[in-house]
Image (cartoon, rainbow over all chains, first blue to last red; front, side, top):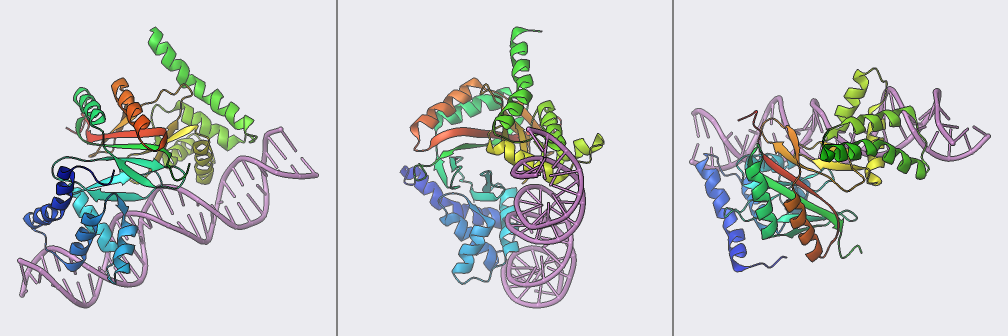
Length: 153
Length: 153
DNA sequence: TTGTTTGCAAACCTTTTGCACGTTA
DNA sequence: TAACGTGCAAAAGGTTTGCAAACAA
């Protein structure tokens, strides 16, 4: 599911400038830590935890603090620029929210914790119908399928 | 009482004896704390956190420890007797897994944190189709719709 | 009796916050 | 220069674990 259609690839590439512009419009300043975190997020294919992002940045020689990672993720989440994903292990993971509205959901391996992405139009349609009939004003949704990944079987 | 309501009520009522039997079959012993937690879970209409269950039990005069709540939930979760629900606030919530396979999903208010349940057959069908086409051996799924509840609007 | 369960307290881990310093516009 | 951003360290939750006493079978 890594290589999808061209449109998806394009949207992936578009996230970094999109997020950068949104932050600038919101009147925030661009420091070194935040830029590095944004770049790291843009490079992800799926979700990552704050600790994972921090470790990856440290491994490349950065002296970035973990607090900056959390603060940046909180800022981005508040602006809807990243999506929070709960895989059931008590750790929050985040991934870029693509501007076109296209998104994916997750397959979580209950044995090894691996996370894989999938997309399904029929599922989105079903969700859309539910959203229309409930009392809530629905703004988003999260779906996780749990099971055993092919490597663990 | 309508037939449909009766059937649903029956499944709800069936959880406590079902879980009790499953635990006995697994060779566990039944202490006072665990029984109380089971009863509390059986009485829930939707999901509750360990802390909420603990507080409720303490409020009725019990001297139960929070560790027993966590240990019981872990045990039940490992046996598939409770389902873990992540509402996005970093707190794990649990609810009884009904033996018949019937289950619901959640509407989470992003403003006040309220959680409401819903069920949708078309959605289940869409999930089922996805489960058949992916590489994972899917054993379960979680769906959360986020939005603003009627009280917050 | 014998191994399980329990309550307490301490430990753990993720996440948040206070603060002084550095940096951006 | 005036805010804002950042790193560090401490604090704040939620959750897990060590342990000795209580308990079920």
